[in-house]
Length: 381
Image (cartoon, rainbow, N blue to C red; front, top):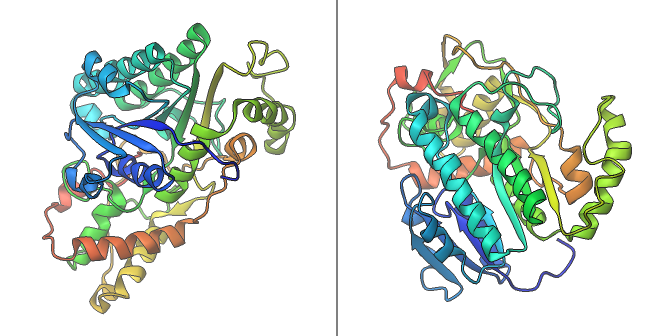
């Protein structure tokens, strides 16, 4: 970012996970103090242990479903970057109660603690699953469909709670709807592993990944460094700039999409002043990559390290019930209001991720069965 940000103390929930640990790296690099709150149910200490000797880093092992733990973690913090959640659509279908408990009860606890602490800004992870059964492309923040899973319901409820807290308590709440994030430290193991690390692990072990359908389905795959940039801008873009750019977006931005809609952020949307912010942004590349393109890029990237991978071909399975064919985000709002500019396209990000995974996973045995893999390779994160 262009402006100089004074050192701050930032709480990152879910900081031992994939996205959270990358955020910790960045904010410590910028000179901030970071508190990581994580119960290690889906995160790993090895993602953050390299910071244990840093006096600006603090790790608290705890569950966001405990309000007192949240209050203790947020003490003396200036900002909150909430990443903790139970991800995965299939997980939520298998266990909706636990997903609800973590993603809604836990979210509300962190939000209450942030309100009581009077933090400067509350940035939280949303999900592209919120778009549900909407078939419109590209996805724009103001038009969503009906949720297709318990996970999607919980992430939408998060958005509703944040909006109510912003308007009821004068908070600044910014939600980031992630589209298929990938990159270093994304876990390739377990029942609910995402498609990219799962396929990489199969290729490294000279096994054929399974593609549901004919490979023409597409997603807006988003490299982790783009997501880190978005969180940084969401936390630190001055409220005055957000207010001014918001007017620009709602006055001119939607015309570029040729959408006719009304927004609550119209000419009267800023009456409350700069102190109240309630915004949702798509965080993606703004493009689309088919599953066949994804496979080809991963295979070609990994073949640079192991030529035997170059001859591996995918296997094709049946489409999974409920999967949408295509997902692509409009990032115009994030570009206009936050100044978000993706630094890595999908191919470059996949190449970098493949290199990291090859270095990290080459010695690991393959554990996923083909039947299990077929049920999960189009998960929306």
